[in-house]
Each structure stands twice: as structure tokens, then as C-alpha cells.
Length: 123
Image (tube, rainbow, N blue to C red; front, top):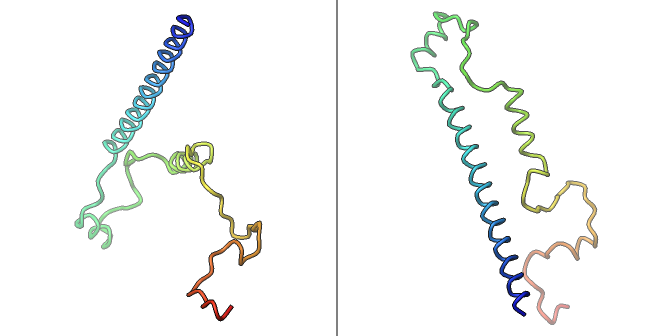
């Protein structure tokens, strides 16, 4: 009996250690993502002022000679967004709703009926 209790206590300690490690890992990943976000934000340039827009409109600025604004390249952005959209990166179970999906039953069985119910005498 004492051995079972000792083993149970060991298992509980191990589970607690794993849970704490998982929480610490999630926290470190979150902090890394926050740091990356602020690094991207710090390197971005502000939007043009109204004066700069007006000068560009009348041709006083050469808009073809642009300096690198420090933002990420479009291909890097697209890859990051598409990677985030992969189903393997989604921790939640969701239903797939397709436009031409066949339903398991008839239309009347699967969808709720609209309008008021008929009176008992009408049926």
C-alpha cells in the first residue's frame, strides 16, 4: 500500500513538472513573438506627411528613388501569413464548411425550418 502511494506521489510530481515545463515553454514562445513584433515595429518608418504627399503629387519628389523602409519583404510576409493559416498550426478543432458539400440527410432534416409552427389542427 505504501509503495502504491509513493508511486502515485511520484507520478503526480512528474505530471506537475511537465505541466510547469509546458507553461514555461508557452510563455517563452509568447515572449519571443512579442519581441519579434516590437523589433519589426521599431524598424518601420512612419507614413508620409501631408506635405510629402503634396510634393509627390505635383512632381517635386522623385518617387522612383525610394529608400528601404525596413519592413519585411512581401514574400516573407506572404510566407508567414500562409504558414499561420495551415491547419496543422491551428490548435482548435473547427468544422470544414465547403460550398458544394454533400449533407448526410435531406435538406429538411439537416436545416431548421423557418417561420411559425403550424397549429395542431392544420397538420
